[in-house]
Amino acid sequence: MNVGGVLYLFQLPTLQIGRFLARNPIIQGGMAVRISGARLAAAVAREGGIGIIAGTGRSPRELEREIETARDMTGGHGILGLNILFAVSNFAQLVKTGMKAGIDLVFSGAGFSRDIFGWGREFKVPVVPIVSSARLATLAEKLGAAAVVVEGCEAGGHLGTDRPMLDILREVVQAVNLPVIGAGGILNGYDIYRALQLGARGVQIGTRFAASYESDAPNELKKAYLAAKPEDSILIHSPVGLPGRAIRNSFTERLETDDIHPGECTGCLKKCGQQFCIRRALENAQRGCLKDGLIFAGQRVAEISQILSVEEIFINLKREFAEACARLGPLPALE
Image (tube, rainbow, N blue to C red):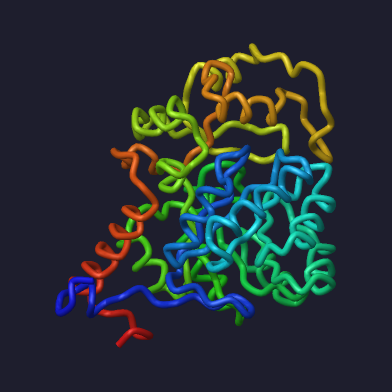
């Protein structure tokens, strides 16, 4: 690891969540539908991060198979998490399925569940809610959260705030005594440095991992990430009842003119605005049918110029973090 150089001097710190210790403080985002699967999660876990399987949009049996496959791919080593959207109608079933299947950690966002903490205690699985305010972070701590992910407006997918992540992060770090994870707008090692400098214990990265070889996104979708321009990052109003950050395409242009028909409803959400079928739109994108697909991606997607392996992404993140430490000074905890 470049012994004697900056990579040796300034290594990423570890991240402790509950009884689990990650060698690198990097959590891969749980991107649905079926972008974050066993192959991606296992690759991240093998690199010493926390790999996340997106459970939203899967059946309980499919979720069990993904967890089992990811475990096999890691050889039983590494940390694996599960991310479930609170808004889905089978939220409780999917969370309990994952916990019974032996997932290490459970993450949840797009709403806030109080019940999930009781399930976590029952199955001895640490729970990490995704929050967008100090108020929710404080509530999560009182209810028994093992950590909190602070997600800002830069993130892809459903958003709970219009504020930048770093602004919220400062407030949450002061409000709780839990590990705080920064999410939204994290793309390189310099971003990791800034988040840790403000008191975060780790970061969650989504879009950069979606644009990896191990991601379950099809080639057509990965090409859309690479082709995106800064002005293509837009907000849409999701039937979930929250804004969502996506890449402008023909589908979102039709949304703007209400030229979308919801079609037959499968009842996948607890409450649905029925402007369009969010599940079908995300599944279309995952299949490469972009004309009828919604492409969720972070605000900085236009900065991604290559599809890389998870190993290459980690190498770059470590190098960039070390360069930031060498240029800006080591973080206090690392001195």
